[in-house]
Image 1 (cartoon, helix red, strand yellow):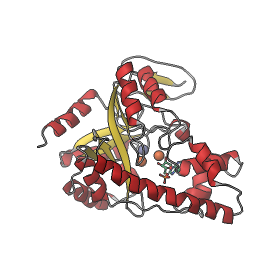
Image 2: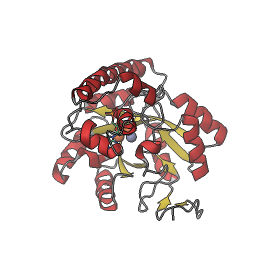
Image 3: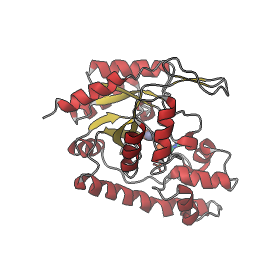
Length: 303
Ligand code: AMP
Ligand code: FE
Ligand code: FE
Ligand code: ZN
């Protein structure tokens, strides 16, 4: 049965998984990037799960923040204004999370506009590659699937699934859209230190998302993390729906050794990542309100 466990509360038995819901979830997405819930729906779900504080971290956009902050205020869920920035890194994937950013900053919005333009430039190229593979697909169909938010590969994936060209998201990325697949188009990205600077200049705290996805060996990882910390990184996403217990322990030790913040997030995307529950980042995870207090302390100590 599926149970949501939080402060002794068990909810909705369905399958045979127990979800440990944490007090704080530092990583989630809405329709403004590649999630499937609106900010209002996301906040309502957080409230239902008993989550005290939630960071909205859409990819390269702050479009959902005002709505989420207002809903949080109404519902009594603390919303942390956040973002997730894709940065240059090979051969894996590097995403930098930003928390407590001033999303009204004109400088931040100018930089994000540039990144959003680069994303938009990529989309017709993906269409061309898919067409060349003999798939009839138009940009209009993909834009429609995105529901008016920023268009990303998961929206291409959903159209491919609807057309019967892929079984599910995983299959669509494996066959067409993933890094080693034939319709992959890279997007222009900012450098890691530029991403960190953008977040810090907007008054935020920069944290490395899902370090597992760097696909770096242990020794190599230490050097990368040291470089990021030297560039102003202040935390590591130790708990994530994509990291197992052994990985979480390794990342926790790496964070503690450098005295940087330990964070955790589900990376919830709604039905675009159907097996990821809001608030769940492994039964071994511990993301209490104290982690958020530490982050606030780091911000307060800045001059
Ligand atoms: P984009 O930002 O447009 O390059 O799309 C990247 C997003 O696609 C990620 O943030 C994930 O949400 C999703 N994604 C990437 N790889 C996969 C995969 N193998 N299966 C499902 N979703 C994926
Ligand atoms: Fe995503
Ligand atoms: Fe990410
Ligand atoms: Zn994410």
